[in-house]
Length: 250
Image 1: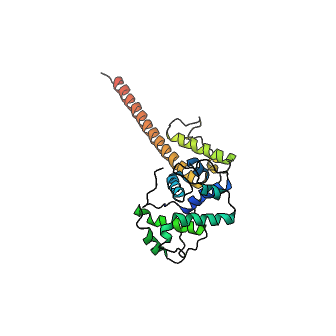
Image 2 (image 1 turned 90 degrees about the vertical axis):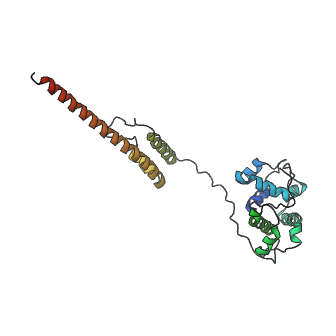
Image 3 (image 1 turned 180 degrees about the vertical axis):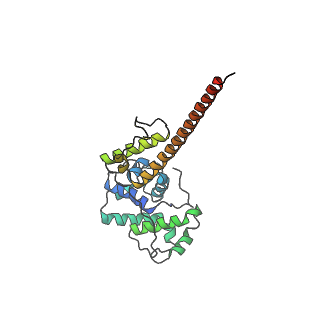
């Protein structure tokens, strides 16, 4: 990572930064804080860089991702020690801000003014949210509490039941049918090999999606069949006319 500039302040989500720190406290601290570590911490890949910037700014990691002594101390801390260490971390990292503002007394508007000098200015509001969020995590009083959407943990994967497996197979079969025309199973008037049980296994959204696709295929096949019948009938009539002309007396 590039060395952070003096006119920079991190703007990662507070919940993501805390998730990385919490992972370090509840699991073995690796030799390097990297993308894999952030991924298993439940952090989205799209914001890895922002979180790494925040950790480096807080002096929890070196430029190459190696944990600092401070991160190592936090990883092995008790809850009480954790609050004390986090307060030291936040106050040291934001030393220049604490010299002009008091998060326990000042509203967010005043705090935003203190952050306007940092780049990128389009992220000023996020910088303030992270600052105040870290203050709260460290037990530092905050007068104007920021509102930040909490990081959502990925939902636990439900084991695929036979019904779900059947539904997926049915949907795949139906969607595969869209790209083909040879789907008859030998029964007159049958367009698709989908049974009533297959249909019952689909939820509302899947039913609408599948049935719309199948409907288009059914209509195209019906029109093609009708056109073919008309062409065949026309050919038969032309053949009859030719036969009649041959039978006329000279």
